[in-house]
Length: 135
Image 1 (cartoon, rainbow, N blue to C red):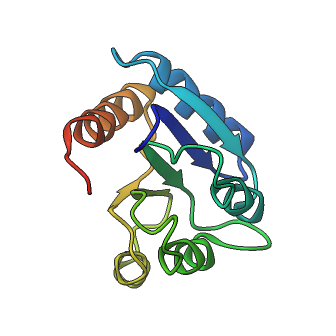
Image 2 (image 1 turned 90 degrees about the vertical axis):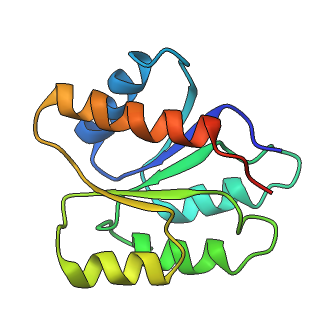
């Protein structure tokens, strides 16, 4: 069973603060866990004593383990594979979208430039994964 926690994986501190502020404006007000590197987030997800997050918000372009590598590791692990991962990136490249979905992304969003667009987009993502029925 999933918790009400949202995991944010993004090496850009300003972006993570904007996402946190945008999620605070949602009626569901989620607990948020922030990771500035994908390897640490993967380690957290592997801890069987912790509940899986409602969804993961993942940046693709990060030093060390990038978002594609994270998706590959997470989605091939039976314990974590069903957790939705929503890509949240600056890349609008067709190749990146295809690769993200091929590696198991549940959604793909290009980071909006205006704060209200961030609030609105994350509202849609949050509402969808709150209401979606998962195995």
